[in-house]
View 1 (cartoon, chains in turn blue, red):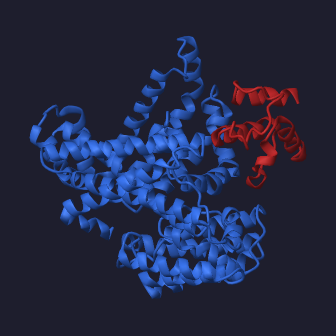
View 2: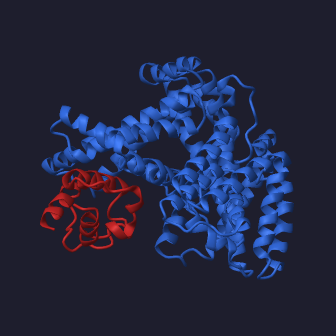
View 3: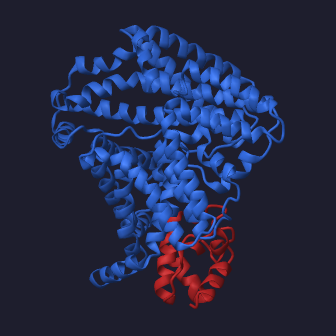
Length: 475
Length: 74
């Protein structure tokens, strides 16, 4: 069930009524039934697989010894690999159960924390099931931790108009980002990237920038919708994005983009590999070759390569995803290894890191490095990737009609200029409101109604004017 | 303790570790600082810090880090 669809809207209205009418004792049970209904809507058969994961993990981790932990990993990773990569093993393409990548990560995180004694195993199976199957975060995250979620999910939430208002506002922002912005730039990217050899360098650059916009608007828009739905239930989800495109370095970017996934990798793969015996041995060997290198830095090399390779493959078994992972492993390593030299150099040439122009330079530099990574990620084959890089660096052709084509989704001629202007005003207003609210929660409280009304008008206008763009509702 | 402060300053020279507190809770140390720190402590004191000990309470200030190193036999 898509979150932007009539069936979901009806489901949500009925569910909210049942949730708040259920009373103190039954509210969490209503939530569990709601989760099951939401899940069954996609394909009732798949309830079997999520149930296997829930029951086995809950049962095994009640006694969190090594053998049980290992068995939990085998069962859950086994199911994930079977569904996600079966086509790569020459077996027929199985359709993966809804949200399997996300709930598997939540499950493994829970099991690891139990094994490390960071949390007490959940005593009640229904409560554990509630945590894993919580419907707003089930399909695309954020990857919640048991520590953050359990108490919130089982506590009774009284009906609060403020939560409904704030949640609704957040959903509206998400729908705007996803339908109006991400949906609109999508066509151009698809066209250019499906035949990169046919376009000039500037066109490829515009398409890549559009892709950055699309990824952020689509993914963070989805998160806004999900967090808004959850807010309506009185439950706060973890924020998954913190204005990532304003990061001053790539390591900082990865702390601000898809935060819950990156924290998961940090806690459950990176940290354990940094402290593991195999890494200690390998980095000592490296230390004999690079005698001047800092020991701490050497210990990061293998875990960084491992985590980024896995992150790449997690996105799917495609060479472009693997290439993207290796690219970022390389960028991260360069960043770690040169950190102290750059600091010394900055001090020598009297660069003040707080200077606004230096900050802007760093943000642009980060966006450029990021764009190269996304060019690898988005290309459909190796030869396409080569063509894209070649085009960007060597093809100086500027085609007016190709650039004009980028504007088509926004309307014709003056209409395009007007709609881009309206969108720009809305996006900037949104950023201003967000930043002001971070400093003072009460800022812009009244003005938000005006903003919400403007967004709603634009969503409706764009969807009606877009006509065929409605197909984007089927994402 | 002095030796530890030196190691800490090697990881981040912009923090006064003698007085600084809440290094993790106030997000003064980034996760990568922590990793560098753990690796250096492992080598310098010939200890092995297990992943389960990497919790904020053990890294919030120099005292806590010192206590952790001692606990692990460093």
